[in-house]
Image (cartoon, rainbow, N blue to C red; front, side):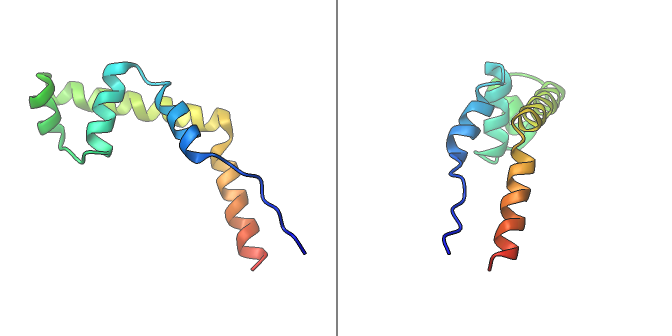
Length: 88
């Protein structure tokens, strides 16, 4: 029995989500999450305060959560996990 699952292009969704962020916010978020830089390192390299870094990360997370909610990505991921669990 073929249990075809919908193809989801997660890279495209991630790119779309990241494009929702304002440029400075995106840069701070990527330096933190992808380059694993500390808030202090980001603040020093961008010549901004650590508090600004914290605010930009908070803003990015808020925007990304709203995007995921709007795209129902969380529900989709949960559904795929559940389907995979019960079909093995």
